Image (tube, rainbow over all chains, first blue to last red; front, side):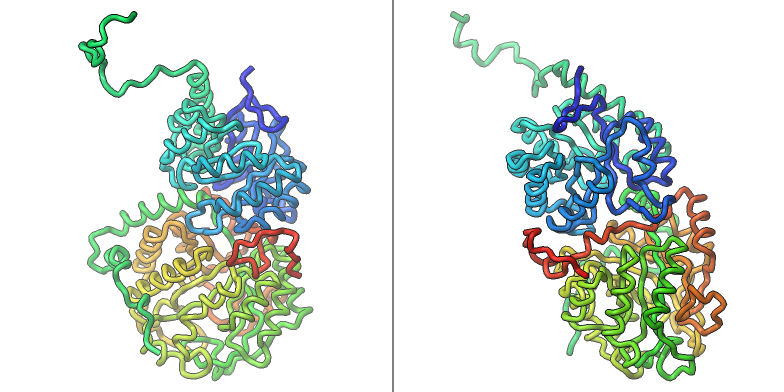
Length: 259
Length: 365
């Protein structure tokens, strides 16, 4: 069976769902169910132990077959992310931590230096670290070296819907990586998710595209199908692309017949 | 002191000016559609909620337009620590975990130490504590940040210096440049978020809006980690009977909100209970991403709901948190009470550096 492996955990679904931006917890839960996602990320800042109606963690942890991956969205330094990771593990019991450090709350681009530092510390402490990064092949290798469970390069800015703007860099990351590469952020349509999977991503993470769709559960299902189709295509082996038609008089005819 | 270059440079504001111009070619409907699409994409179907807590109405300034100005015959009062705790407990019962603490300009009755103690008390139970008080020094902002204050709201009121100096008749607030430089001092002191705004009605609203935009961009370039928000407070009738000389009607306010959303797709835009229920409901999916709820503009108004004192201004949207959330849900928007985690509060000394050794990290309080 074709399974996604993260640390010692395996998942048959390769779609990871984000849980912010939904119009209600009920719609979010429907979307999670419809997506078939087995790994779901939730921001620690949306854990609310004092008010059940405002809490995303409680209802998510009640879904069977779903592993939670808390994220540190809101942290602007490694120290803050490390503190958040400890709290999240205590509250959720999950070994996963999605390290999200975007010090500029406007454009939400991840800070590579702080992310590296937090990932190094948390991996050493035994977390399954999933760092959200810009699509930088060197940073990806550095994160692999310090023991991350995967790397999560962005397709484009969070919530931008600009798709795989960083496709060329993501291809480089995939080519060089020995750990799973998961595209996170920026995807707008299922076809883009399929494209990421065809390129060789091990999984994709989607949030905004589902949360703000006209019908979130249906869109979640569409993404699940696209991810599965893209994965199947990748495994089947895509036909080589050719830049031009093959010339009828090959440039090498002067070499004569082979042998 | 003369005005800084960044405040007068119109290179960056051409697009915003075009949208705000009375003979703009963009229809209000077209701006609304674009603003709505951007808001949905960037912020989703959510609305972050906060509530104000008036700590004190003592004031040393003579702002012509304000119900708390020092020459008004309003009864003066400040919350003592046990009263603050009682108010916070009453707010907590309403679900509130994100609060804005307010005072007037600095006075002996409500000085920095009083404010710092109040922040300490609030940070014990609230997830996110912001302050709208008086301009402070960098060291004072740092001390507030270390007690758990993450945001400062400081409105310039108007960026027209002549109007500003006429409206602020006496007191520390009379210093236009000092006020202008206050958000930068807060950020230097390790405060994470600054809220800017102009009090609409005091001066030419379009001129003020363009300056506000330049102020925000200037701060963003200098303090690249800063969280920033813009509020749109509009003059309402209040004690003293001041009539705003540049009234902003519903359409112009809407145009301003849409134009700011388009010009600043990632910036939090705030609308308070100064506006009516219908106006707030209408704006909740079109550009605004943060709203106040259950506002009481009197000192001690949460525990003592029968308080008949004069507030700083009149509340237009007086729905309860429950009623307001119901209205949001009807519009397919999720009210969010907690959208912050105190783990991200500091300490302030690391705010502007990349020092990350967690063993050096000490708790704030």
